[in-house]
Length: 343
Image (cartoon, rainbow, N blue to C red; front, side):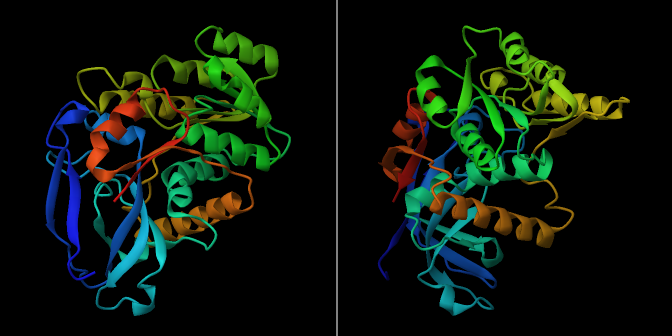
């Protein structure tokens, strides 16, 4: 371990994937309350696709190391941290910094990965799993027998969301391109072709009284359609603006527009609710509560993976040095499952 070297991927500015840079350096030391994680797996998510375009609404200034989450083993522990953590496999949500061979995190942000899960299996469930679990159970508070609509049901978050919903006894309508329909049917999902079908009309046919929840990552016009598809007492959970990924102009505006709409809809005298889900919400107000919820929810997701209720396939595994290729593959929309980077 003594001669290990830090390798990290740097996003220098608004560049094509090939513009990512590989930087080498000294493995960082753990400060008080911190651990150094030797990364075993980190993911390529939609956030990095937005960040390289300068379109992620609260990304740090360039240059920076992207990488929203990671799984690895604790290499060293800082002062005040249980030294017994060394060698344990943990997961962490970091927003940026994960695309590196060694990552320093606050020990309180490291969640232990249960035995029986590989680093790659655990990695597929971190960002996507927490997002899906919290939207389903903390925001929409779904109950068995309800019907929900999941946009992008074969995507990273969507595929975990539909499986967690089915495990909770919920009926699921999912939008996806035709090539994913068979695999969705195998999971008990009623597929809708978002390219060929009039999605709102088709959903009304399938759920004439409306749906109990809609999970919408598209933003833009889709959010309005989603709101109109809700049954009385239903909940809209918007969690992104994927439809504006390639737009120019303000990166905050698409999100502010959704926030404005949800505020307005919630102010209206009706029984439906709208939320804009942000995985980091509440952290500034109470870091301890935020961490406790994150730990509890990720532990639930890992348990669901171990029970076989959630399978999050790995589409491809590439070394950190091939991050550009991994990002291009993720953006091509030609693969199903998570693209994972390893050291």
